[in-house]
Image 1 (cartoon, rainbow, N blue to C red):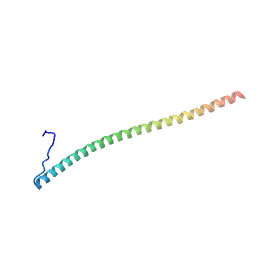
Image 2 (tube, rainbow, N blue to C red):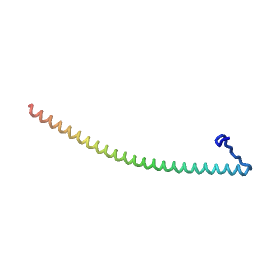
Image 3 (cartoon, helix red, strand yellow):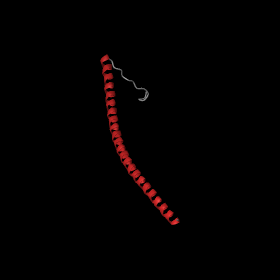
Image 4 (spheres, rainbow, N blue to C red):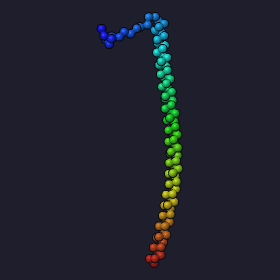
Length: 95
C-alpha cells in the first residue's frame, strides 16, 4: 500500500478527550471571530474617516456654490442695469 492510498484519523478514546478537542475547536473559532471583529472595527473606523472627509468636501462645495450664486445674482443685476442704461441711451438718440 502507498502512503497516499489511505489516511486514518484517530478518534479520542475517552469522553474527556472529546470534550477537550471540542473546547479547543471552540477556542480556535472564538479567536478567529475576535480577529474578524477587530478587522471589522478597523474598516468601520476607516469608513468613518472617509465619511468625515466627504462631509468636509460637501461643506466646502456648498460654500463655493453659495459664493458662485451670489456672484451670479450680482452679475445678473448689473447686466439688467446696463441693459436699462443702453435702452435709455437708445431712446434718447431716437427722439
